[in-house]
Length: 254
Image 1: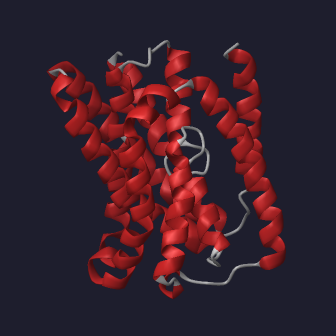
Image 2 (image 1 turned 180 degrees about the horizontal axis):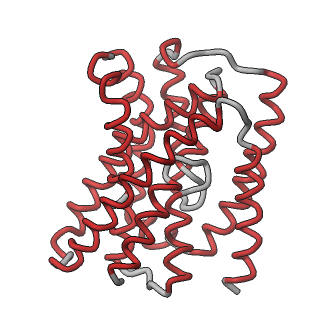
Image 3 (image 1 turned 60 degrees about the horizontal axis):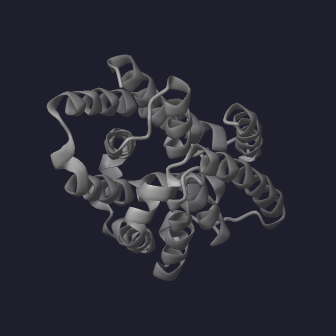
């Protein structure tokens, strides 16, 4: 992996982390296009630079998070299912699921689900705000998010759909998905560093630092833009995008 590769992957990560299109899936596909092999380092790189994008949410929502203890309770309860699933299936995920073909199928199927869900919620029209969530509903959102252990599924898409399923408005669902990413990705990154940090060289840490910084700034742009988008439009266009990308790569990867 070169410095340019790290910059490109940092941009891809930052722009896609909070959109319902799977940042991990896009990183795997981008690595495939760039000719970067899926080595243990590459897999760790793709996980660790996500923390740069997550820090952009901490930066943007810092004032709200520092004064709202009840919000933190909802976030932590929603995180628990994902934390358990991720811990139990860590080795299986990294060994077998970081695969471009799995990503392609996950993107396509997920796109169909997003479109179907949006048609359903046009009739139901959820009205809840985040501060109206109870702990049971928070856990349900976390269960939805845990489906995203399969690359290409999208942590963002899973948690947004879960949040809408328990009654949050689309905008509130997106914001809760942003906030839920904080403990989720801190845990995923920290655990991965504990497992593979010793095997990472100083040059590789340099590449990680570059990807980390680039993902932070590109994520700032994506978060602000996504909030503005969902305030006016549905997520159907992201579903269509996922299906198109999935079909294209289905032939590219043959």
